Structures are given as structure tokens and as C-alpha cells.
Image 1 (cartoon, rainbow, N blue to C red):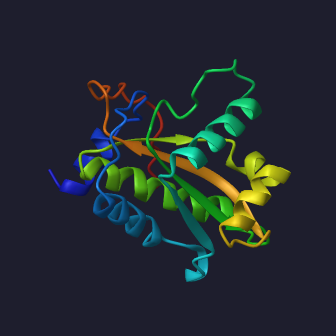
Image 2 (cartoon, rainbow, N blue to C red):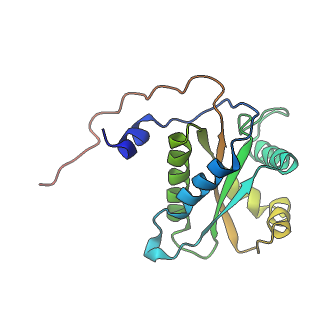
Length: 175
């Protein structure tokens, strides 16, 4: 089977991570895969913030937890030591589509490197908040960015889940 198709069929969301941070070279490869995602009209109007700083990771986890409405102590990132935040230009009409392609590429790249990943939502709400805008400003990003998603990455702590059977009746041919 083709290696890309094999990765697509095998990749699953991981919901428990080891504390160990993957090698920076692996994180860079994951980011590079995201940067090579297709984009509408080739505009490349997305950006990726790679967060490995424990304090900033904790701050983002807590912001996300509050937005999600979970009890104190819950970690919506499941202990993943790396958070790759995908942003897109606020005024770009294809921001969600382009950002989604970046996320997909990064999750497949993580899998291909033996790492687990999961898409975590609520990035839009995080970076619309005063606290989120302050984080972006501190990182040198102007206020024109919208959060699309978080790609949480790390070493899976346990077995990778098996794929659920695919639902029937979702393909229609027009030959």
C-alpha cells in the first residue's frame, strides 16, 4: 500500500501523552509539512506558533479549559508537551479551509514520525480574548490573526486506537 495512504488510514487522535518533548527536528518536520499544505490561490495566509514552553503551554491549556467549560484540573490537551497553534489572517475568506489543511498535514506528519497528535478546538475563542491577543502581541504577531486549531503533539502513552469501521453509503459515482 502507498505510504501516504497507509498513514491516512492509520493515523488516529491520541488522548494520553508522555511528558517527554519530541526532538526539535521532528517538530520542525511537522511544521514544515503544515507549511506545505495546499492554500487557496497559493496565498499561504496561515501561520504556526510552536509552543514547547511549559508556562505558555499551561496558560493555553487553562484558557482552553475555561472556554470549554470543564472543571479545574482537566487538561483539554491530554498532557501533550507540544502545542502547534494554527492561525490564519482574519480577513482571508478561506482561512478555515486553509488552516484545516495545515492541521491535517501536521497530524499526518506527526504520525509518520511515530508521534501522536490530536486537533483541539477553541483556538478562535482563545485568540479573540484579551489574554490571547496579548500572547500573540508578545510573540510579535499583530492582531490580524484568527485561531483555527491546535495540533497537540507528543509521544503516545499507550496504544494507538484502532480505526472505527467506515460508514457505508457515503460515496456517490457520477460516471
